[in-house]
Image (tube, rainbow, N blue to C red; front, side, top):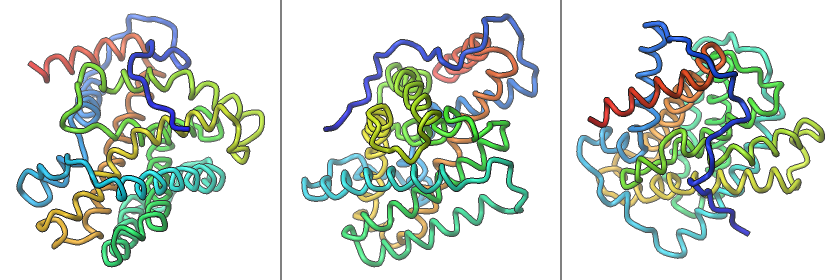
Length: 287
């Protein structure tokens, strides 16, 4: 059964700090401006277009039914694998390894090179590998922004990045913006975190976790389809699967940095103050 992610849900409330009137510092406002730009404007198609130096209209086209079936199965398997592997084996303390982000990108590029050479049929094998690598990179960013990954809600916020980073150029910004997607996921992430706190992430069959993962999959499948379609564009195909996977990784790392910046600021200033500043910046950008 597929669970669609409704973007008409009420605003997220489970992690909101008490209402306050704190004013963000100039440094934090600058960080928030960067976050807004990433969360509201960054798309995988845009990154790939920038990589090849021209718009890639074909990326928005629908895949054939057979290809869509392969993508759907690959996305479900990838997210199950990521939940099982990444969130149960990540160290909870911040990593001291230099260049961790570059290492994750290099490994993702290597897996993409293999997938690019062998074609669409390797996606069910390649995507779980690259998705787990991306999730580990997201978790490194989360820790660097002060998240405690021993808290199930914070760990699930890492998976939330796959939904937040799945906007397309055709999306209605009013209904698919950052806070709209967070709000749509609010109830399921709270319920999933409660289950994970009691039973751990190994009980992946719990209805709350299944529902949460289905919502993530409904969004993540959009950009995976774009990734697959990009391989059919001659100018992208000539660059190869390694470059496409590197762009895939960097896209989600950018979104993760922005997402966890917002969460860090919410802990400092309270969610209402941060959202007010966020919406003001978003409105100014749109104007």
